[in-house]
Length: 353
Image (cartoon, rainbow, N blue to C red; front, side):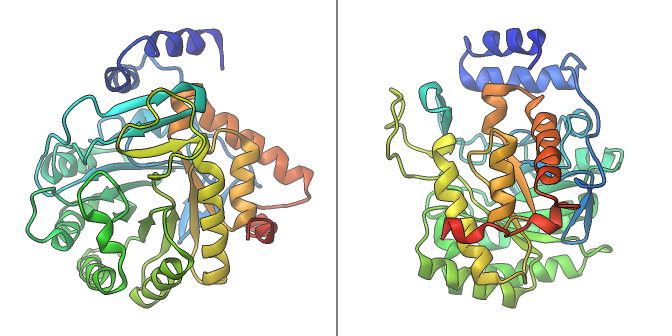
């Protein structure tokens, strides 16, 4: 992190977290944020469900909810970018305050509640983007007041699918009441059937991923894998934020919402390793949760991930963290004699089981 970025972060941390989030996006949109450009190497270049990636370090959904900063984010060192979540209708989300920094824990708690501009506005922005070497995906969500939340995912995919490179079914946010109920086998089977039907109507059959919660039992995970394999989805993202609060120090630890950042790393990596064992290479996995260093990204990959995503690390390390992690990952792969990312996937999975 350079002095300019360090000063910018110090200024943002004096502000309300949600206002700071908005200002960081504005800095990107106006060209004020320094960007490293693409980061790649023969070792880092890989594929994810058929998508070519310059490197396996992606941006998780939730940062650019409304797809307003796609172009600069694609120059920030990420190998792929996920925007959203988008719902059929615009919605304001939950009352403020709804975002909290847990500085002592290097974490955050949010209870946004899928605040977004809706699929029409987001779809228009996606349709106007200039496509490049960094794949852009959309996180699909459901409106809080919807009578048929499963159908909402299908509607958003049908509307926005032609303008993205992949899509994610998000049934794991803890901030929309009863949304996680859709992770049950019967509900998930029906939901994914509808989503895959919508996908089949697109001119290009983009990969569809499923994002799951970290607060699931082994039996839950086994059922999700069974449904996922039967549905034809492209892979699983593990994991979303957690409701667990063990070991936190911050004054905000009791706030309602999903916890992300450093405390989630071990929990999410154990879920990832278990999914890797259950899928036995049949589905690519994306590891998310608590990544802030190259070593942690590498740990996710060796636990079974084909690629990783981060978000909360940017709160504490700035935008340069993506490029820093990607370059460090390249060095770790070389150190251990791996010619490619793919060669390292799952090589240390048993350590997490």
